[in-house]
Length: 144
Image (tube, rainbow, N blue to C red; front, side, top):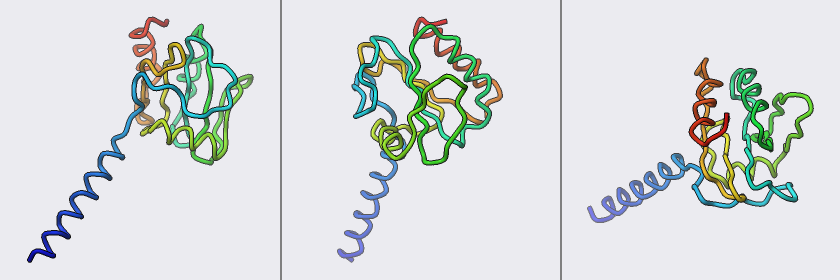
């Protein structure tokens, strides 16, 4: 009986650890993990996205309309579209960066102030008004 209880305890602990990591989110106030940017401006947006984000057409327009530097991270191995003229970080290091930040959903936009995560927004690929949701987020952080 004691052996069975120990097994149950181990399964419960393992399950709780899995749940906590599955619900991980970027921590506000954290600085960025290792990245290729020599210098991140005092205020910037980091856009993390993957091939499985749905149609980002309107979302890209909203992002490009901001008067703040954009850094793009295409994570999870499969190349995904970004508007012409924007530099995108791709590859295993980009995926490692995303995972170090504990990104749980793509697209995610990090709003940085003084190189630290001040706020973040998570998109929903099933939301046809994702761009409008992003506009509301920008309004909440004082962007247009």
